[in-house]
Amino acid sequence: MQNGLDDSLLFPSRLLEELDWSQCSAQFKPAISATAPGDNLILRPLQASDYDTGFLQILGQLTSVGDVSREMFQSRFDSMKACKDTYYILVLEDICTSQVIGAASLIVEQKFIHSAAMRGRVEDVVVSKDYRGKQLGKLLVQTLTLLAKHVGCYKVTLECSDDNIKFYNNFGYEKSAENYMVARFKD
Amino acid sequence: MQNGLDDSLLFPSRLLEELDWSQCSAQFKPAISATAPGDNLILRPLQASDYDTGFLQILGQLTSVGDVSREMFQSRFDSMKACKDTYYILVLEDICTSQVIGAASLIVEQKFIHSAAMRGRVEDVVVSKDYRGKQLGKLLVQTLTLLAKHVGCYKVTLECSDDNIKFYNNFGYEKSAENYMVARFKD
Image 1: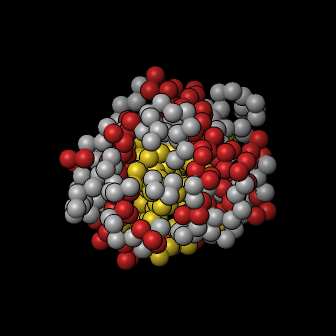
Image 2 (image 1 turned 180 degrees about the vertical axis):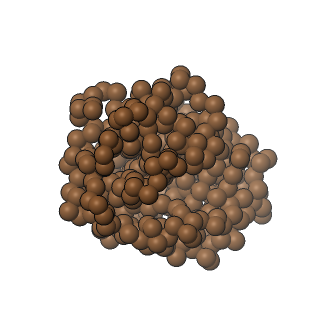
Image 3 (image 1 turned 90 degrees about the vertical axis):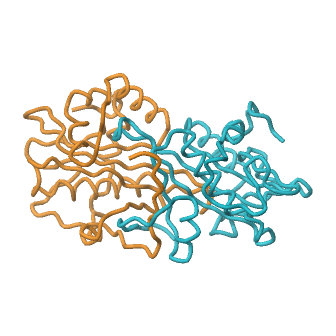
Protein backbone atom coordinates (compact mmCIF):
# COMPACT_ATOMS: atom_id res chain seq x y z
CA MET A 1 0.00 0.00 0.00
CA GLN A 2 1.20 3.51 -0.75
CA ASN A 3 2.27 5.83 2.05
CA GLY A 4 0.97 9.36 2.47
CA LEU A 5 4.00 10.94 0.83
CA ASP A 6 4.06 8.93 -2.36
CA ASP A 7 4.40 11.40 -5.18
CA SER A 8 2.58 9.11 -7.59
CA LEU A 9 -0.72 9.53 -5.69
CA LEU A 10 -3.29 12.05 -6.85
CA PHE A 11 -3.79 13.24 -3.25
CA PRO A 12 -2.23 12.32 0.12
CA SER A 13 -3.60 9.04 1.46
CA ARG A 14 -3.32 10.35 5.02
CA LEU A 15 -6.50 12.30 4.29
CA LEU A 16 -8.38 9.00 4.23
CA GLU A 17 -6.84 7.96 7.55
CA GLU A 18 -7.81 11.29 9.09
CA LEU A 19 -11.55 10.97 8.31
CA ASP A 20 -13.79 10.98 11.36
CA TRP A 21 -15.72 7.78 10.69
CA SER A 22 -17.88 8.40 13.79
CA GLN A 23 -19.62 11.10 11.69
CA CYS A 24 -20.61 8.50 9.15
CA SER A 25 -24.36 8.79 8.53
CA ALA A 26 -24.92 5.61 6.49
CA GLN A 27 -25.35 2.21 8.15
CA PHE A 28 -22.78 -0.45 7.27
CA LYS A 29 -23.62 -4.06 8.13
CA PRO A 30 -21.11 -5.63 8.48
CA ALA A 31 -19.06 -2.60 9.54
CA ILE A 32 -16.60 -1.41 6.92
CA SER A 33 -14.77 1.90 6.60
CA ALA A 34 -12.34 3.84 4.41
CA THR A 35 -9.40 2.15 6.10
CA ALA A 36 -11.04 -1.30 6.33
CA PRO A 37 -13.18 -1.68 3.21
CA GLY A 38 -13.50 -5.47 3.36
CA ASP A 39 -11.50 -8.65 2.80
CA ASN A 40 -8.69 -8.25 0.28
CA LEU A 41 -9.76 -4.72 -0.57
CA ILE A 42 -8.04 -1.38 -0.14
CA LEU A 43 -9.44 2.09 -0.69
CA ARG A 44 -6.79 4.54 -1.84
CA PRO A 45 -6.16 7.64 -3.98
CA LEU A 46 -5.83 7.14 -7.73
CA GLN A 47 -2.20 6.76 -8.75
CA ALA A 48 -0.37 7.25 -12.02
CA SER A 49 0.15 3.50 -12.43
CA ASP A 50 -3.63 2.89 -12.47
CA TYR A 51 -3.52 3.11 -16.24
CA ASP A 52 -2.56 -0.58 -15.98
CA THR A 53 -4.90 -1.70 -13.20
CA GLY A 54 -8.28 -1.47 -14.88
CA PHE A 55 -9.35 2.02 -13.69
CA LEU A 56 -10.45 3.14 -17.16
CA GLN A 57 -12.22 -0.19 -17.74
CA ILE A 58 -14.20 0.35 -14.52
CA LEU A 59 -15.21 3.83 -15.68
CA GLY A 60 -16.36 2.10 -18.87
CA GLN A 61 -19.06 0.38 -16.80
CA LEU A 62 -20.43 3.87 -16.07
CA THR A 63 -20.16 5.68 -19.39
CA SER A 64 -18.15 5.96 -22.59
CA VAL A 65 -14.42 6.27 -21.90
CA GLY A 66 -13.19 6.25 -25.50
CA ASP A 67 -9.56 5.99 -26.45
CA VAL A 68 -7.27 7.22 -23.69
CA SER A 69 -3.61 6.50 -24.42
CA ARG A 70 -1.01 6.10 -21.68
CA GLU A 71 0.29 9.56 -22.54
CA MET A 72 -3.19 11.13 -22.32
CA PHE A 73 -3.78 9.40 -19.00
CA GLN A 74 -0.50 10.62 -17.53
CA SER A 75 -1.06 14.12 -18.85
CA ARG A 76 -4.57 14.30 -17.38
CA PHE A 77 -3.33 12.85 -14.08
CA ASP A 78 -0.54 15.44 -13.93
CA SER A 79 -2.81 18.38 -14.72
CA MET A 80 -5.35 17.25 -12.12
CA LYS A 81 -2.59 16.97 -9.56
CA ALA A 82 -1.24 20.40 -10.51
CA CYS A 83 -4.63 21.87 -9.52
CA LYS A 84 -3.91 21.94 -5.82
CA ASP A 85 -6.59 20.62 -3.43
CA THR A 86 -9.08 20.09 -6.25
CA TYR A 87 -9.19 16.49 -7.51
CA TYR A 88 -9.78 13.60 -5.12
CA ILE A 89 -10.31 10.38 -7.07
CA LEU A 90 -10.74 7.27 -4.93
CA VAL A 91 -10.22 3.74 -6.17
CA LEU A 92 -11.03 0.40 -4.59
CA GLU A 93 -8.41 -2.23 -5.37
CA ASP A 94 -8.69 -5.99 -5.00
CA ILE A 95 -5.23 -6.84 -3.67
CA CYS A 96 -5.55 -10.46 -4.84
CA THR A 97 -5.76 -9.42 -8.47
CA SER A 98 -4.17 -5.93 -8.19
CA GLN A 99 -7.14 -4.64 -10.18
CA VAL A 100 -9.26 -1.55 -9.57
CA ILE A 101 -12.84 -2.67 -8.91
CA GLY A 102 -14.48 0.65 -8.01
CA ALA A 103 -13.93 4.40 -8.24
CA ALA A 104 -15.48 7.74 -7.33
CA SER A 105 -14.43 11.39 -7.63
CA LEU A 106 -14.71 14.47 -5.44
CA ILE A 107 -13.96 17.76 -7.16
CA VAL A 108 -13.52 20.84 -4.98
CA GLU A 109 -14.44 24.26 -6.37
CA GLN A 110 -13.08 27.45 -4.86
CA LYS A 111 -15.53 30.34 -4.40
CA PHE A 112 -15.46 33.97 -3.36
CA ILE A 113 -18.94 33.75 -1.79
CA HIS A 114 -19.52 32.51 1.78
CA SER A 115 -16.22 33.99 3.02
CA ALA A 116 -14.19 32.54 0.14
CA ALA A 117 -15.63 29.06 0.72
CA MET A 118 -15.14 25.78 -1.07
CA ARG A 119 -17.85 23.44 -2.34
CA GLY A 120 -17.52 19.82 -3.36
CA ARG A 121 -19.05 17.76 -6.15
CA VAL A 122 -19.29 13.99 -6.20
CA GLU A 123 -18.94 12.52 -9.69
CA ASP A 124 -18.46 9.23 -11.51
CA VAL A 125 -19.24 6.70 -8.76
CA VAL A 126 -18.91 3.13 -10.04
CA VAL A 127 -18.38 -0.36 -8.65
CA SER A 128 -17.57 -3.33 -10.86
CA LYS A 129 -20.54 -5.57 -11.62
CA ASP A 130 -18.62 -8.46 -10.03
CA TYR A 131 -18.29 -6.68 -6.69
CA ARG A 132 -21.80 -5.36 -6.10
CA GLY A 133 -23.72 -6.20 -2.90
CA LYS A 134 -20.66 -5.53 -0.73
CA GLN A 135 -21.68 -1.97 0.32
CA LEU A 136 -18.86 -0.60 -1.81
CA GLY A 137 -20.85 2.12 -3.59
CA LYS A 138 -22.04 3.23 -0.15
CA LEU A 139 -18.46 3.17 1.11
CA LEU A 140 -17.23 5.31 -1.79
CA VAL A 141 -19.96 7.95 -1.34
CA GLN A 142 -19.66 8.02 2.45
CA THR A 143 -15.90 8.42 2.20
CA LEU A 144 -16.07 11.26 -0.33
CA THR A 145 -18.79 13.03 1.68
CA LEU A 146 -16.68 12.91 4.87
CA LEU A 147 -13.64 13.93 2.82
CA ALA A 148 -15.49 16.97 1.43
CA LYS A 149 -16.22 18.07 4.99
CA HIS A 150 -12.67 17.27 6.13
CA VAL A 151 -11.06 19.40 3.41
CA GLY A 152 -13.33 22.33 4.33
CA CYS A 153 -16.27 22.32 1.91
CA TYR A 154 -19.40 24.11 3.15
CA LYS A 155 -21.54 21.83 0.99
CA VAL A 156 -21.23 18.93 -1.41
CA THR A 157 -23.56 18.23 -4.30
CA LEU A 158 -24.21 15.61 -6.96
CA GLU A 159 -26.71 14.71 -9.65
CA CYS A 160 -28.64 11.44 -9.63
CA SER A 161 -31.61 9.67 -11.19
CA ASP A 162 -34.95 9.32 -9.35
CA ASP A 163 -34.04 5.72 -8.48
CA ASN A 164 -30.97 6.81 -6.55
CA ILE A 165 -32.47 9.61 -4.42
CA LYS A 166 -33.06 7.30 -1.43
CA PHE A 167 -29.54 5.92 -1.69
CA TYR A 168 -28.04 9.40 -1.47
CA ASN A 169 -30.40 10.40 1.37
CA ASN A 170 -28.34 7.96 3.50
CA PHE A 171 -25.39 10.34 3.44
CA GLY A 172 -27.33 13.55 4.10
CA TYR A 173 -28.04 14.59 0.50
CA GLU A 174 -31.49 16.08 -0.10
CA LYS A 175 -33.17 16.75 -3.41
CA SER A 176 -32.90 20.45 -4.15
CA ALA A 177 -35.74 22.55 -5.60
CA GLU A 178 -33.22 23.60 -8.25
CA ASN A 179 -33.18 21.89 -11.63
CA TYR A 180 -30.12 20.39 -13.25
CA MET A 181 -29.70 21.88 -16.74
CA VAL A 182 -27.38 20.54 -19.45
CA ALA A 183 -26.15 21.94 -22.77
CA ARG A 184 -24.20 19.42 -24.88
CA PHE A 185 -21.68 20.28 -27.58
CA LYS A 186 -20.75 16.63 -28.31
CA ASP A 187 -22.23 13.28 -27.27
CA MET B 1 -9.09 47.87 -20.80
CA GLN B 2 -6.57 45.15 -20.04
CA ASN B 3 -4.69 43.42 -22.83
CA GLY B 4 -4.56 39.64 -23.27
CA LEU B 5 -1.16 39.32 -21.58
CA ASP B 6 -1.91 41.20 -18.41
CA ASP B 7 -0.73 39.04 -15.55
CA SER B 8 -3.31 40.50 -13.18
CA LEU B 9 -6.20 38.90 -15.14
CA LEU B 10 -7.69 35.58 -14.01
CA PHE B 11 -7.65 34.32 -17.61
CA PRO B 12 -6.48 35.75 -20.96
CA SER B 13 -8.94 38.31 -22.32
CA ARG B 14 -8.13 37.21 -25.89
CA LEU B 15 -10.40 34.20 -25.21
CA LEU B 16 -13.35 36.61 -25.20
CA GLU B 17 -12.24 38.16 -28.49
CA GLU B 18 -11.89 34.70 -30.04
CA LEU B 19 -15.51 33.63 -29.33
CA ASP B 20 -17.53 32.81 -32.43
CA TRP B 21 -20.52 35.06 -31.79
CA SER B 22 -22.25 33.70 -34.93
CA GLN B 23 -22.90 30.54 -32.84
CA CYS B 24 -24.83 32.60 -30.33
CA SER B 25 -28.22 30.95 -29.77
CA ALA B 26 -29.94 33.70 -27.76
CA GLN B 27 -31.55 36.73 -29.45
CA PHE B 28 -30.16 40.14 -28.51
CA LYS B 29 -32.23 43.21 -29.43
CA PRO B 30 -30.47 45.58 -29.75
CA ALA B 31 -27.44 43.51 -30.75
CA ILE B 32 -24.77 43.29 -28.06
CA SER B 33 -21.86 40.88 -27.70
CA ALA B 34 -18.93 39.96 -25.46
CA THR B 35 -16.77 42.62 -27.10
CA ALA B 36 -19.57 45.22 -27.37
CA PRO B 37 -21.76 44.78 -24.29
CA GLY B 38 -23.44 48.19 -24.47
CA ASP B 39 -22.76 51.88 -23.88
CA ASN B 40 -20.04 52.52 -21.32
CA LEU B 41 -19.76 48.85 -20.46
CA ILE B 42 -16.92 46.37 -20.85
CA LEU B 43 -16.96 42.62 -20.31
CA ARG B 44 -13.62 41.30 -19.11
CA PRO B 45 -11.93 38.65 -16.95
CA LEU B 46 -11.87 39.23 -13.20
CA GLN B 47 -8.65 40.91 -12.13
CA ALA B 48 -6.83 41.11 -8.81
CA SER B 49 -7.72 44.79 -8.40
CA ASP B 50 -11.45 43.98 -8.44
CA TYR B 51 -11.35 43.81 -4.66
CA ASP B 52 -11.80 47.60 -4.91
CA THR B 53 -14.34 47.79 -7.75
CA GLY B 54 -17.43 46.32 -6.13
CA PHE B 55 -17.12 42.69 -7.32
CA LEU B 56 -17.80 41.24 -3.87
CA GLN B 57 -20.69 43.68 -3.34
CA ILE B 58 -22.26 42.46 -6.59
CA LEU B 59 -21.93 38.85 -5.43
CA GLY B 60 -23.69 40.03 -2.28
CA GLN B 61 -26.82 40.64 -4.39
CA LEU B 62 -26.79 36.89 -5.13
CA THR B 63 -25.95 35.30 -1.79
CA SER B 64 -24.01 35.77 1.44
CA VAL B 65 -20.42 36.84 0.81
CA GLY B 66 -19.35 37.29 4.43
CA ASP B 67 -16.08 38.88 5.46
CA VAL B 68 -13.46 38.60 2.74
CA SER B 69 -10.33 40.61 3.54
CA ARG B 70 -8.03 41.94 0.83
CA GLU B 71 -5.55 39.18 1.73
CA MET B 72 -8.21 36.45 1.46
CA PHE B 73 -9.33 37.85 -1.88
CA GLN B 74 -5.80 37.93 -3.28
CA SER B 75 -5.07 34.46 -1.96
CA ARG B 76 -8.24 33.00 -3.49
CA PHE B 77 -7.56 34.83 -6.78
CA ASP B 78 -4.01 33.43 -6.86
CA SER B 79 -5.07 29.86 -6.10
CA MET B 80 -7.80 29.98 -8.76
CA LYS B 81 -5.28 31.27 -11.26
CA ALA B 82 -2.78 28.57 -10.27
CA CYS B 83 -5.37 25.96 -11.34
CA LYS B 84 -4.62 26.18 -15.04
CA ASP B 85 -7.55 26.42 -17.47
CA THR B 86 -10.12 25.99 -14.68
CA TYR B 87 -11.56 29.29 -13.44
CA TYR B 88 -13.12 31.78 -15.85
CA ILE B 89 -14.83 34.57 -13.92
CA LEU B 90 -16.33 37.33 -16.08
CA VAL B 91 -17.16 40.79 -14.85
CA LEU B 92 -19.13 43.61 -16.46
CA GLU B 93 -17.67 47.01 -15.65
CA ASP B 94 -19.29 50.40 -16.04
CA ILE B 95 -16.36 52.47 -17.30
CA CYS B 96 -18.02 55.71 -16.17
CA THR B 97 -17.92 54.66 -12.52
CA SER B 98 -15.14 52.01 -12.77
CA GLN B 99 -17.46 49.72 -10.83
CA VAL B 100 -18.28 46.04 -11.45
CA ILE B 101 -22.01 45.77 -12.17
CA GLY B 102 -22.31 42.09 -13.09
CA ALA B 103 -20.41 38.81 -12.84
CA ALA B 104 -20.62 35.14 -13.75
CA SER B 105 -18.31 32.12 -13.42
CA LEU B 106 -17.42 29.16 -15.62
CA ILE B 107 -15.54 26.37 -13.88
CA VAL B 108 -13.96 23.67 -16.03
CA GLU B 109 -13.59 20.15 -14.65
CA GLN B 110 -11.13 17.67 -16.12
CA LYS B 111 -12.32 14.10 -16.60
CA PHE B 112 -10.92 10.73 -17.65
CA ILE B 113 -14.21 9.66 -19.27
CA HIS B 114 -15.14 10.61 -22.84
CA SER B 115 -11.50 10.47 -24.03
CA ALA B 116 -10.20 12.57 -21.12
CA ALA B 117 -12.79 15.27 -21.75
CA MET B 118 -13.59 18.50 -19.95
CA ARG B 119 -16.98 19.67 -18.75
CA GLY B 120 -18.02 23.15 -17.72
CA ARG B 121 -20.25 24.51 -14.97
CA VAL B 122 -21.86 27.94 -14.94
CA GLU B 123 -22.12 29.41 -11.45
CA ASP B 124 -22.92 32.63 -9.63
CA VAL B 125 -24.52 34.71 -12.39
CA VAL B 126 -25.54 38.16 -11.13
CA VAL B 127 -26.31 41.59 -12.52
CA SER B 128 -26.68 44.65 -10.31
CA LYS B 129 -30.28 45.65 -9.61
CA ASP B 130 -29.53 49.05 -11.18
CA TYR B 131 -28.50 47.52 -14.51
CA ARG B 132 -31.29 45.01 -15.16
CA GLY B 133 -33.32 45.10 -18.37
CA LYS B 134 -30.19 45.60 -20.50
CA GLN B 135 -29.82 41.91 -21.56
CA LEU B 136 -26.73 41.67 -19.38
CA GLY B 137 -27.62 38.40 -17.63
CA LYS B 138 -28.26 36.95 -21.08
CA LEU B 139 -24.92 38.32 -22.27
CA LEU B 140 -23.04 36.77 -19.35
CA VAL B 141 -24.61 33.31 -19.83
CA GLN B 142 -24.24 33.37 -23.62
CA THR B 143 -20.59 34.39 -23.29
CA LEU B 144 -19.76 31.66 -20.76
CA THR B 145 -21.60 29.03 -22.82
CA LEU B 146 -19.63 29.93 -25.96
CA LEU B 147 -16.46 30.08 -23.86
CA ALA B 148 -17.09 26.56 -22.48
CA LYS B 149 -17.30 25.29 -26.05
CA HIS B 150 -14.27 27.34 -27.13
CA VAL B 151 -12.03 25.94 -24.38
CA GLY B 152 -13.06 22.39 -25.33
CA CYS B 153 -15.85 21.31 -22.95
CA TYR B 154 -18.07 18.50 -24.25
CA LYS B 155 -20.95 19.83 -22.15
CA VAL B 156 -21.76 22.62 -19.75
CA THR B 157 -24.24 22.42 -16.90
CA LEU B 158 -25.85 24.62 -14.25
CA GLU B 159 -28.55 24.53 -11.62
CA CYS B 160 -31.56 26.86 -11.69
CA SER B 161 -34.99 27.41 -10.19
CA ASP B 162 -38.19 26.51 -12.09
CA ASP B 163 -38.64 30.20 -12.93
CA ASN B 164 -35.36 30.31 -14.83
CA ILE B 165 -35.69 27.17 -16.97
CA LYS B 166 -37.02 29.11 -19.97
CA PHE B 167 -34.27 31.69 -19.66
CA TYR B 168 -31.59 29.00 -19.85
CA ASN B 169 -33.37 27.22 -22.73
CA ASN B 170 -32.31 30.25 -24.82
CA PHE B 171 -28.70 29.12 -24.70
CA GLY B 172 -29.32 25.41 -25.40
CA TYR B 173 -29.66 24.19 -21.80
CA GLU B 174 -32.33 21.53 -21.27
CA LYS B 175 -33.70 20.27 -17.97
CA SER B 176 -32.10 16.92 -17.20
CA ALA B 177 -34.00 13.93 -15.80
CA GLU B 178 -31.32 13.86 -13.09
CA ASN B 179 -31.98 15.46 -9.73
CA TYR B 180 -29.71 17.98 -8.06
CA MET B 181 -28.82 16.73 -4.57
CA VAL B 182 -27.21 18.81 -1.82
CA ALA B 183 -25.61 17.95 1.53
CA ARG B 184 -24.77 20.98 3.67
CA PHE B 185 -22.17 21.13 6.41
CA LYS B 186 -22.65 24.88 7.11
CA ASP B 187 -25.23 27.45 6.02
